[in-house]
Length: 112
Image 1: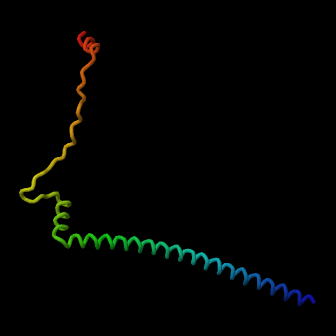
Image 2 (image 1 turned 90 degrees about the vertical axis):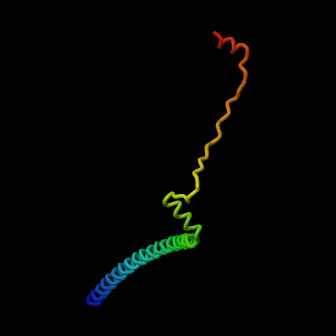
Protein backbone atom coordinates (compact mmCIF):
# COMPACT_ATOMS: atom_id res chain seq x y z
CA UNK A 1 0.00 0.00 0.00
CA UNK A 2 2.82 2.38 0.82
CA UNK A 3 4.55 1.69 -2.48
CA UNK A 4 1.36 2.58 -4.32
CA UNK A 5 1.15 5.92 -2.48
CA UNK A 6 4.79 6.65 -3.31
CA UNK A 7 4.20 5.95 -6.99
CA UNK A 8 1.11 8.19 -7.00
CA UNK A 9 3.05 10.94 -5.21
CA UNK A 10 5.92 10.70 -7.68
CA UNK A 11 3.46 10.65 -10.60
CA UNK A 12 1.65 13.73 -9.25
CA UNK A 13 4.99 15.50 -8.72
CA UNK A 14 6.14 14.68 -12.27
CA UNK A 15 2.79 15.82 -13.68
CA UNK A 16 3.01 19.09 -11.73
CA UNK A 17 6.54 19.71 -13.01
CA UNK A 18 5.48 18.98 -16.59
CA UNK A 19 2.44 21.25 -16.24
CA UNK A 20 4.61 24.11 -14.89
CA UNK A 21 7.07 23.55 -17.72
CA UNK A 22 4.25 23.66 -20.30
CA UNK A 23 2.79 26.80 -18.68
CA UNK A 24 6.18 28.53 -18.91
CA UNK A 25 6.43 27.58 -22.60
CA UNK A 26 2.95 28.91 -23.27
CA UNK A 27 3.76 32.12 -21.38
CA UNK A 28 6.91 32.60 -23.48
CA UNK A 29 5.04 31.96 -26.71
CA UNK A 30 2.33 34.45 -25.81
CA UNK A 31 4.99 37.11 -25.13
CA UNK A 32 6.64 36.42 -28.47
CA UNK A 33 3.27 36.54 -30.22
CA UNK A 34 2.54 39.93 -28.64
CA UNK A 35 5.91 41.26 -29.80
CA UNK A 36 5.31 39.91 -33.32
CA UNK A 37 1.88 41.52 -33.54
CA UNK A 38 3.18 44.90 -32.34
CA UNK A 39 6.09 44.77 -34.81
CA UNK A 40 3.71 43.85 -37.64
CA UNK A 41 1.51 46.84 -36.75
CA UNK A 42 4.55 49.12 -36.69
CA UNK A 43 5.69 47.77 -40.07
CA UNK A 44 2.21 48.43 -41.49
CA UNK A 45 2.33 52.03 -40.23
CA UNK A 46 5.77 52.52 -41.80
CA UNK A 47 4.50 51.04 -45.06
CA UNK A 48 1.55 53.48 -45.10
CA UNK A 49 3.91 56.42 -44.45
CA UNK A 50 6.17 55.28 -47.29
CA UNK A 51 3.20 54.93 -49.64
CA UNK A 52 2.11 58.49 -48.83
CA UNK A 53 5.65 59.74 -49.42
CA UNK A 54 5.79 57.81 -52.71
CA UNK A 55 2.56 59.48 -53.83
CA UNK A 56 3.90 62.93 -52.92
CA UNK A 57 7.19 62.28 -54.73
CA UNK A 58 5.33 61.03 -57.80
CA UNK A 59 3.30 64.25 -57.84
CA UNK A 60 6.49 66.30 -57.53
CA UNK A 61 8.12 64.36 -60.35
CA UNK A 62 5.06 64.89 -62.53
CA UNK A 63 5.22 68.62 -61.84
CA UNK A 64 8.95 68.72 -62.62
CA UNK A 65 8.36 66.92 -65.91
CA UNK A 66 6.79 70.08 -67.33
CA UNK A 67 8.73 73.20 -68.28
CA UNK A 68 6.52 75.34 -66.07
CA UNK A 69 7.20 73.08 -63.08
CA UNK A 70 10.94 73.22 -63.66
CA UNK A 71 10.79 77.00 -63.94
CA UNK A 72 8.83 77.27 -60.68
CA UNK A 73 11.25 74.95 -58.87
CA UNK A 74 14.27 76.96 -60.02
CA UNK A 75 12.62 80.25 -59.05
CA UNK A 76 11.69 78.92 -55.62
CA UNK A 77 15.04 77.29 -54.90
CA UNK A 78 17.33 80.07 -56.10
CA UNK A 79 15.17 83.23 -56.06
CA UNK A 80 15.91 84.14 -59.66
CA UNK A 81 13.88 86.02 -62.26
CA UNK A 82 13.84 86.11 -66.04
CA UNK A 83 15.47 89.02 -67.86
CA UNK A 84 13.07 91.94 -68.06
CA UNK A 85 10.99 90.94 -65.03
CA UNK A 86 10.62 93.48 -62.27
CA UNK A 87 10.02 93.19 -58.57
CA UNK A 88 6.59 94.18 -57.33
CA UNK A 89 6.32 95.29 -53.74
CA UNK A 90 2.84 95.23 -52.28
CA UNK A 91 2.36 97.94 -49.67
CA UNK A 92 -0.67 97.90 -47.40
CA UNK A 93 -2.96 100.92 -47.76
CA UNK A 94 -2.34 103.81 -45.40
CA UNK A 95 -4.89 104.21 -42.68
CA UNK A 96 -6.97 107.34 -43.11
CA UNK A 97 -7.10 109.63 -40.08
CA UNK A 98 -10.49 111.19 -39.48
CA UNK A 99 -10.52 114.94 -40.02
CA UNK A 100 -13.08 116.33 -37.64
CA UNK A 101 -13.33 119.88 -36.46
CA UNK A 102 -12.70 120.30 -32.75
CA UNK A 103 -15.56 121.72 -30.77
CA UNK A 104 -15.51 125.39 -29.69
CA UNK A 105 -14.40 124.60 -26.14
CA UNK A 106 -11.50 122.39 -27.40
CA UNK A 107 -10.36 125.27 -29.59
CA UNK A 108 -10.43 127.57 -26.57
CA UNK A 109 -8.45 125.08 -24.47
CA UNK A 110 -5.90 124.66 -27.26
CA UNK A 111 -5.55 128.45 -27.47
CA UNK A 112 -4.37 128.63 -23.84
